[in-house]
Image (cartoon, rainbow, N blue to C red; front, side):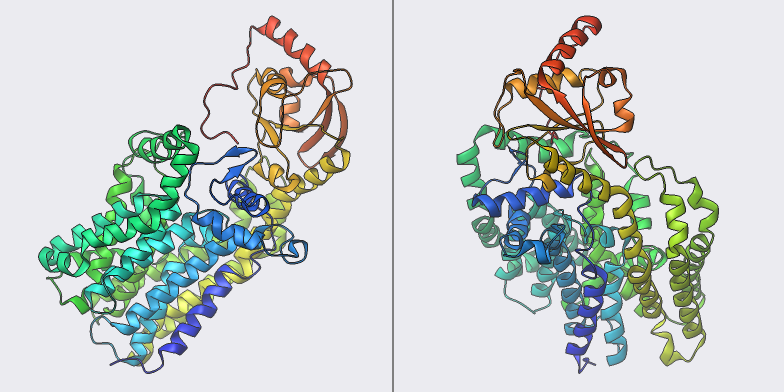
Length: 596
């Protein structure tokens, strides 16, 4: 039976998405360390008019294709930024948020247009909403959909393409539509989109035992040509303009080397994505596992009833590919979360009276109970949190009452689900949905306030330090940051920042870079009398022997950070003395692919 009011279901899904991902989205600053790099690159595009090559801190940023920068840049190109975008986060976060909301709507629409099994109208609506919320409430999705990076956009476009491939199989769209969207996914993160889509299609075709039929429907040669027509022009133009450095960085380092070798110390065991799979779908992991096993046990289904099997192949494709990769990060699992949402909702819909259903419902609600109790007992474990950048976090978190509200939301949702489970059969279909509504209330009333608390403790000091640096800076005086490295300092000052870590030769690197390094926005300058450099340094780094002895004038202290004015001649002499005394030499010219 078709649902007669699909527009109402989609409206409810859209409202839920807006509350989860857009509510108070711009009320906090950028979160170090990666989001400011995206935001600064997009803002530079809007300000300079160079929409070809992303650039940050005076250097080209080759690690991601341009689509996310273009979308963020459109926001930064709008007028009156100080009024509606004071932290820069509306413009830079909105593409991520809207990507996840759009995917929620597409997931719900898929189940409304091609319901799986024989649900009545009410069950069809519940399953559609439950699938969208199971995806949206994943901890990974909640985090990455509200920050200024490309992961949510890539996941949204790749997932939309995969769903549209299934639409084609189910007779819902033309052959070219998914390939067009896949081309946009390649513009969002690179050729990995084609690899994941191809692996999903291959697994599905083998399990459906219908490779010739799917080949004829999807028309892969024509499709790949269309995908290439969408994505390749930028890649070719970028390669022509930037040449070998772009090829080596994007294709060599950020794609091939990330798959074949460990970069940025992201070394994880081969089984890394097993616990990620479990955690990313809490507390609905039992339903996910049941849906996955059930999909693999099914016999080949008619096209319009094969969504559960397609979702299982989709999830397994992500799992297999990134398990094989040498570099592993939790964010790599995000493209699998929509498939997990579909499997969870369909497993809940397919529950029938019996001990198996009782075990699945019971284990899910038991996990809810564990989370409720853990949050309620926050006074036992919160004081154990040790975060050097936020030393007052435990006391502030307990005083905020956010954990109490979180426990209440989980608990009320769990009790409501339990009551529906014990209620009449017509009410049981909503047990998963009411638990999800409780979790949605947790996001709005507890999680978002906790994020804002973290912003005040961790990011507000660096924003204030950026303002102080601009107030104290002399004309043509360079700006540096040593110790704890925050790209947001570059974003908020809109100036090139020379970043150096805590290594013993840091003063030598800083001195040598000021004298020799050239990039957009900064030219080499001699250590002449009267010249100086502003240095933002954290308190711990300031006590290290190689920095403690640097002659300086302290201009202010905000939180963990101090602002120094260092005379260039004094820095030059200190660097010479340090080199002679400790046998050190500058090494800043050695390749550092992730350097700010």
